[in-house]
Image 1 (cartoon, one colour):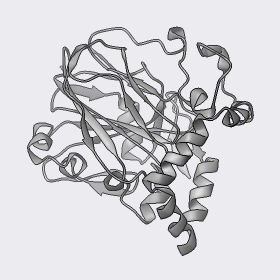
Image 2 (cartoon, helix red, strand yellow):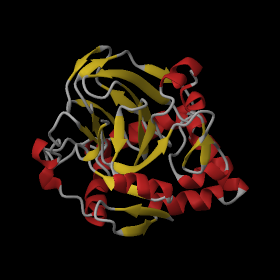
Image 3 (spheres, one colour):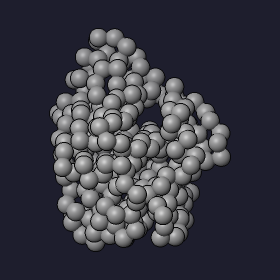
Image 4 (tube, rainbow, N blue to C red):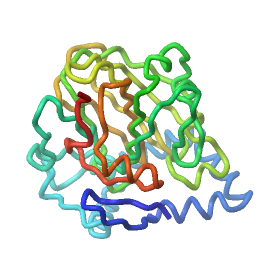
Length: 289
């Protein structure tokens, strides 16, 4: 069970169907063997084709009903496949972007945890210990963010799986770190260090208001495809950066020292191992004074 708080301080415990499935799979040797087989590229490709098929659209309505998803917020209400639904686009008014140049916004829907980057200290991402260096596989780049923050946004399968830029600026090329598709889920850490297993992609945003912001997307079990829109170019605050195909996923931001101050409730929750539920475009911090 994962403790999650809303912005009003109400704390609940969450366990999804995916959580229960993975707990059973990782709980025995046969299940772990099956997981290892499922994350092979060929199997992932087959899964992707199935989710793109017209027949898969039959699973949309039961999922929408079970998770109480409001399709009226979407730009369309009927879908050609399950993945067409999963990558659905919302109307702009459904996710308004908080105004104010000094406001640091969430790039996506998700459950947020923040970690302060202190010299020679590790931080925890879903029960697995990391340094920024091991996450990026780049010692020089990691040093540039010493004293800043790592912002981890965990997306569940019923979340909106598109993400945006958090500020105006100039974006770098995309840097891809290949890996085996594996689930972004606390249960997985009993057997595998998930961020060393998962494919991930990052770029650097030379932002107008927050210095250099590193933006990373992490794929997930089976399909978990990262679909970014742009290479190196100028971008705008609130502009869509990309989306994930089917699978639970994670978005990570890394900000430099003295650039951004996270909101107090998020810091407090993170220190107590509680994730904070946020929405795309919502205020999660501010420009440091």
